[in-house]
Image 1 (tube, rainbow, N blue to C red):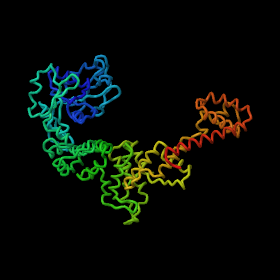
Image 2 (cartoon, rainbow, N blue to C red):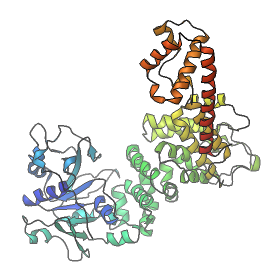
Image 3 (tube, one colour):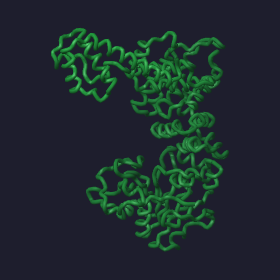
Image 4 (cartoon, one colour):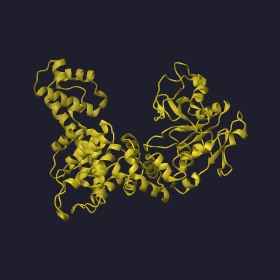
Length: 542
């Protein structure tokens, strides 16, 4: 098994080893390597204390006192080392040729401007979590074994060792039990060894999310780990191991102690995962959803009407599942677009109604997303989509002017997202055809009216320019000149430059425009028909 370890990570380990300390690649990056995925960030565990780490990297990569290479702004023993992006690949120059920018980034964000972050964390033990959120006190550990034992899941409790000649082999392996079954492999110039004390590789192979040690202890230490278990299952298409799942169900109420900011981060990752609907359903089955989106649970078991074969909750879940867009705001809108249906339902059976559920749902979604600490931009977009998801469109009845009003209402940049939400809504209702003729026709009209195909609006000058620069009085002559200019630009788009158009307009102003205008209109109409045929062909409409 070969791993591609960035030069910067290798050099950090070399420096820690060279100073007489242990250093191991740990956590999610190891899991990603074993899954043959590119790690998003890199974490190193060491027995060096934070102040010792900072001292070791005092002059790293050209750092100075005013522009330090490290930052340490937490209580968890994690020091961030800033790495110029140029050092992230093995083939580039040595670090002393690069300067570290004088900027303190958020260690949660691994990439900033022209540098990345590698986090170095001192081995630590978990202590009591009275608030189910933070350890009462941080205790540093002495061995890698202790550090791996306090991690959340077996797939995240695997370490990689890169032996270094500057540190005696005996010292490196003195604290690592012989029970490690991991194979040795090469990465560039290194023989690497995988330290797997909790059979995490086996769980990766079998696609299992399993807590390290006693799952009840792990979740009582940090209740967010329950949501992380669901998130990993959703992202990786893994199953949660029965005892771990049982512990989540038992301690689900602990999630109410977790801040909305931390819940927000995990929810976003679930929504953006390859299997978001499965993630939401697992949250419901384990009892976690009631502490995240209790409004969504109100649709469980609530039937709709003759237009729907699924309950409200099932429909919302399936709409998320079949949402064609990868955008967070569109997926959130798909999940929440019918959130107000339980409250607006009137009557029972096939003829139940849900009048104004779109507008009521938009207001509800706004409050939900505010509670979950989403940004103003995301909230505004989701609210807009839900508020307009019931837009009416029938090719036989709707005119181009009404489509222009829709574009004006929601914004041209949001029309495709609105169509994607309608597709999600349709597929979530059990309709087999994602994009019927009506939607294709709407896309055709939107493109037709929004691009101003073969319109004088595409010219780099307008009537005001002709009046100002050529002193032509208002009247039909201005329209005639613009029509002739447009016909010439249609033939040769390179002529669509303001100075060139004004020069040509001055010449046209001296001519009899009637015949020219007739010829121009013929060319324009031919171009319009040609463009219209192409747009219709694109959307398969007649």
